[in-house]
Image (cartoon, rainbow, N blue to C red; front, side):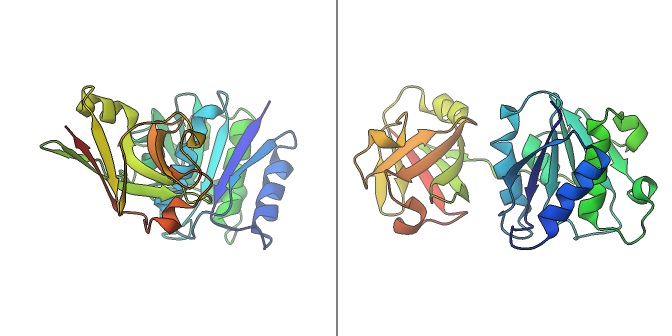
Length: 257
């Protein structure tokens, strides 16, 4: 099965996504297209990376992931095609790839788009679609672009340990207003060392890790870890981000006894 996923800030009310899909199937008719999200906040590279980071490893080997967010930032920069842990990525060189992977990709090439479609005025989304289709068709990365060692690199902020406190921050708030924190389960357990703890956020707190949102009474806060290992703070059948007054970058503290 030839799977290609789309993560974009293009929205769904205009023609952009439809034309993107048309470019893909025109070059690879057998492509199985999966929409991860087209509702990423416009130009928000970090939000796009977080959404795909939480989905990408659920896909089978050789899936191709296209990321089109803030794609018009610097036209003079090449596009990137990369392979990491069996997954392919095509995106602008705007830092999104390093945020998704959290490390340097195993293999990455810089792509001159004009060499692949011959259209001087073609859109970046069309160029990315054509490159993705070529990968689906089995074209090797070395034939698509020029190997490079350095790409634009950003990293999500890491939690800071001070005394008996772990200082974290909100990375993302989803459509249900659940709150995703930059504290992973591995980091939490390493610092916790089986000690009692309290997660402090705005005017509320939680002193246990639950397996599911429904472990708390309706309307009450709950803290868990998602499948990607990130701490999540939610209200059972409520909108935590709105009702608790928490936004992206808001501080989240964990106090250990």
